[in-house]
Length: 387
Ligand SMILES: Cc1ncc(COP(=O)(O)O)c(C=O)c1O
View 1 (cartoon, rainbow, N blue to C red):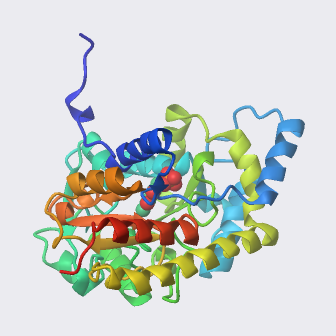
View 2: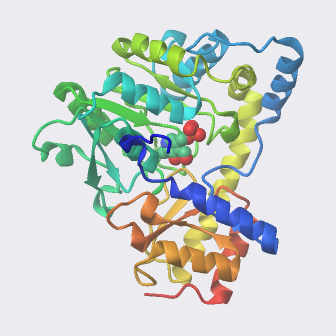
């Protein structure tokens, strides 16, 4: 039998398994409503699709520079200057294969096997699973409603020693909560002064509903800022992300990229330059207006349906709902809801290793009508009720 390493024995990304079940339901019943997918239902902006066609016709599309083509790195730097008021240049940017690629590169470049890296629980599971595969120790900070489900300096102060790294996401997945700019600045200062690498996942920036989002680079250029075209830019399958790197990490990340993937996909890079144009932004802001409308619908209807305990959806497109009064097995509950209604939700176990059996994540990245229909079906089937 072929050899299999112990370190590859990590948790599956359960969301992907729910997506598969939803696809089966679509085939068997033709009525699936996939409120499980953390991705926009819309294609890339028209300007990007035109740029892709042009690149197909005009470019060789061979390997590119490992860190990404200069026009794209310049466009990303300009985007951060405009959005965050930070002084970013193309030299600070490395383009990666999705932000997922950035995390793998960064963890390899910054951490030794055995290092401790802290993150919020609930939090995005791939951080935990990728770090585990690399032999790092993951320290989950139990984050509840009192801190908007986000880590705080007070939590770090209580640790026996500063961790090698801290990962924060704001807006977060699965909760959608935003870290207040002052708290993010305090976290960045604490990390800088304690030798902890702050990795600030800012891939949901651009999708927020009134609360301000800040970039960690406003406070500390010793932090890493991670971005992606997957969420606001509506380009998940194009597999492009990026990181703004402190100077010391630039060369290690470049050399690792050269060896691990050579470069991110060339066609996606050429096309993505157009994602940062005013034309594309106007189209994308239209999607954000739709997310806002759907979020209002949820804020209005969820309590009436009995789901009155959920994290404040400050940004992104998720509602993280407490279903503890309905079940203590969110996996079985979601399977039952899918079987009875065709509505696919994501059980909380992916995101919270301690309490996830009592929570569920609902994505409102699809159309408002689809979300309304899902709520109608769940109400009609009697799968929800007040606590
Ligand atoms: C918080 C967070 N970070 C990173 C990612 C990875 O996204 P991508 O690799 O498509 O950029 C996701 C995907 O859902 C996410 O929710």
